[in-house]
Amino acid sequence: MQIVASGLTLGAMYAVSTIGLALVYGALNMLNMAHGAVLALGGYVCFYAMAVLGLPAIVGVAAAAVICGGVGLAIYHLAARPMLNSANFETQIFIATIGIGTVIENVILRLFGPQPKAQPLNLPGALHIGHVAIPLQNVLILAVAVAMMASVAWLLGRTRAGRAIRATAQNREAAQLMGVRIGRVYAQVLALSGALAAVSGIMISSLAGLLPNVGADPMLKAFVICVVAGLGQVRGAVVAALALGLLESAIQYAVGVQYSFAILLVIVIAALIWRPYGLFGRKQVVRL
Amino acid sequence: MTGVRRDVLICLALAAAMALLPAMVGTRYVITQITLFFIWGVVVTQWNLVLGVAGIFSLAQMALFAVGAYGTAMLGYYFGWPMPLAMLVAALVTVAVSMLIGLACLRLRGPYVALLTLAIAQVIYLMVVNDTGCFTNPPSGCMPLFGGVRGFSRFGDLGFRAILGSKWFIGQYYVGLALLVLAVLFSILLIRGPLGLAFKALRDNPGYAMSRGVGQLKYQLWVFGLSAFFTGLAGAFYAVQFGVVGPIVFSLTMLLFLLAMIVVGGMGTIWGPLLGAALLMLADEGMREMGDWRDIGLGLILALFVITLPRGLAGLRR
Image (cartoon, rainbow over all chains, first blue to last red; front, side, top):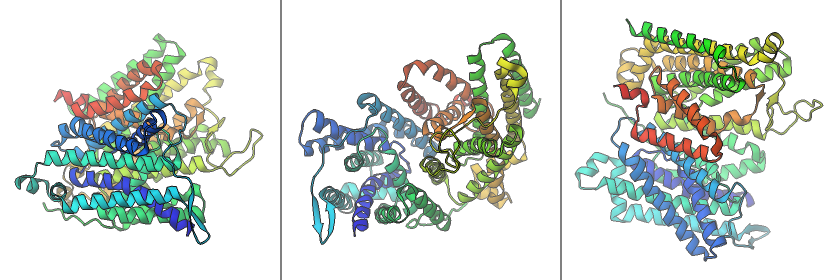
């Protein structure tokens, strides 16, 4: 029970950061390596707003989401847009975002220093079900994650903007011919992904503490989840995130914390050899 | 003059110039930095074979470098092997590891390969750092099998200290130079030869290449295996050059630094990566005083070059 609870919390946190990555890849074929740094930035903005400026929690979260959304927009306009039409866009944007991520991470390091900080957004107390105690913090994270996923699902499935995003992901040229302004879709997707990263960063740092590189590990896991699910598959990513979260906490319990990530990756490599396009991905047939 | 001859001649001329250098500049710092340039030069020319020529987006190169370095250190530390033998065996082990990695990402494309190879490198790193059990208990304290966070030291050297005394670093300089010249000649012959053609064909149009009988399995294993030999040897030489091997060789900053060299110089070209290595080491030297700003500078250089000059400096000529 305790394992299931912490596994679900982990999975939910992963899911929120993974959705952003999967959306961006689905729409632009872009792997955003700066995602981890944006995650950390979100955590720090919330920390700064609450601990230094003394603002209420909701303002801190909103500020983080807005600023990280802005960073996402900046990444689109400064890096992705100029090279969208080049032949190796996927490789180039990958390298460019590694560079951007390094810059963001080190700017945070300069501003806040290398000492870990505690995220002030914290709910004390625990929920007791039978003789299992689940910290309220975990309950809150789970609730926020579910709410975020539901609103993203609503956005994608029920709104005009969501339809444009899905159309662009399916077929860029066809969407453009139907009058979708794909430039705007890209900008929206990157901004949304930045905002999701901010919320996810706040949740992760409220459990793990704040460090400039706090985003690196969740980002790697988010990528692993994306790859397992099939890049660009948003719904598959959520399922895979929850499954990997549960699996991770089970391995941590059974074998030990230091091996959990390694075992996870071995499983992932096996899965990739079995299904190279991801568990939920469709095999692409190449015609000459 | 054919392309091969011209490139080989350039390579030999540069090598001759570098060989005369220690007679003119004698300071130990400069010589050691140039030796380090030789090491990075070997790594980037070999990485370029996979990344630029074969177009496989592998990020495992630093992990392979680490295999070479750790292999040498461990063979020397645990078995007391003479260093040249340990280096050679470590390089061969690196080839085997690299072919395994090539096999694992055979059916993957583009960014999937990058993620998988990055993940493999991370797993190796985590296994090394998180291993706290003692494998042996020397007087200096507990020693995990892979050295843990501290890494290895005192595993032997190439014996230049005994021959040249305080000028030992000049001997190392020439070993590094020889290694780089061999690696560059190797990459010239490979890029200009039939294997290079096959790699480029698979990079530019895998479908057509395969239908003309250029099998992906065979050539992917070739490029991973061949490029790993000198990478492993460079790692091994790094180990004997500095006398210490620690988990820092896995760090993302180092990976970024070398990737930036290739990107700045020009992926897929013969001289681009070397040019990039020289420029970035000079830039790094210039930023040394700036501490944390160094990484920011590196990141900016990387992003700016990809955005404005995607073919690198070598691409300017065309």
